[in-house]
Image (cartoon, rainbow, N blue to C red; front, top):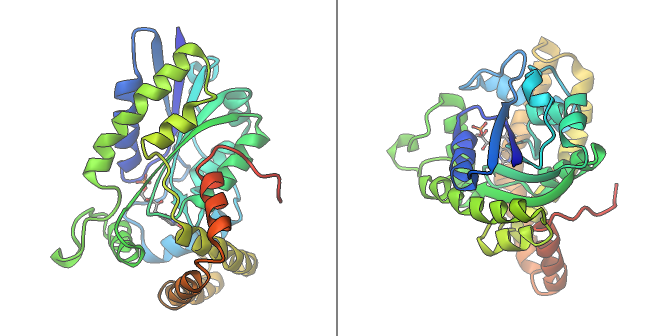
Amino acid sequence: MKEVLIIHYSQTGQLTIILENMARTLTGNNITISHYQVVPEPEYGFPWKPTRFYDVFPETFLQIPSDFHPPKPEILEKKYDLVILGYQVWYLTPSIPINSFLKSDFAKKLLKDTPVVSVVACRNMWIQAQEKIKRLLASVDAKLVGHIALVDRHINHISVITIEHWMLSGRKDRYWGIFPKPGISDTDMDNASKFGPPIKKALNVDDFSKLQDELLQLDAARVNPFLVRTDERGNVLFSKWANLLIKKGEPGEPKRLKWIGFFKFYLKFAIWVIAPIVFVVFLLTYLPMTKKRKNERKYYASVALKHTK
Ligand SMILES: Cc1cc2nc3c(=O)[nH]c(=O)nc-3n(C[C@H](O)[C@H](O)[C@H](O)COP(=O)(O)O)c2cc1C
């Protein structure tokens, strides 16, 4: 008998559907699947109030944990053969609920010496968030054996507009009737069921060494080299902002909110002015950077962790 635990958090239910589709083809006579949904305390409202949406940035980026409801005793008492960890990206970082869980003693208990498959569903920028997940998993002695990334496939700037509409209105529909639907497409969500069989195969023979290669053949984690650059630059700039904003007071305090207003303005500037400049530099250096790009593609699509910082 194999025991699988699916851990996740999802505000809109998008990730829940993806994981359900995977679980459908993973389940079998000899496989028991348990679920633990991380519920923050207090919960983040959805749809987001605009100020709150930006005000969670400093604590998210600095990976400061906050409270959540603990797993039930029946979840904690089992030893799992595999954990599937579903998460979303907030500000180029794993969301606060998932980060809080991974920094808790519950994560040490549930994940130590346990194979983990991570599943991220986000707008499109997951590369550095996944590096943070790799480090968090290493800190609780978990073994990352697979990674699946589902993204909004529309061009970057279109998805920036549509995700803001979705997050602030709560409606996953076509903004103004002209933009595409935000988030992961229905087809990609349905097709998440294709990842179940290779995971099941590895689980049944207790050998996960080839799993990521098999998942990659199913297009599990497509690395976009331009987004790698943007994510990298974004992390440098976000680090400066987060360290500044955290000193301006507690979430929701008027003095801090004034600064969050500046950050919001800066974010728009970064997306609409800096990102296109990064894109031009990316194009100008396309040929000399060929080897670096190839290496990065290989590394970021893998489950390996570089021993830098
Ligand atoms: C506060 C906040 C910040 C976000 N930042 C990013 C980001 O930096 N990169 C990204 O690809 N998606 C980002 N997203 C989109 C989420 O990753 C995710 O797609 C969306 O919140 C729906 O996920 P859920 O319903 O599973 O919670 C952000 C969402 C929120 C709420």
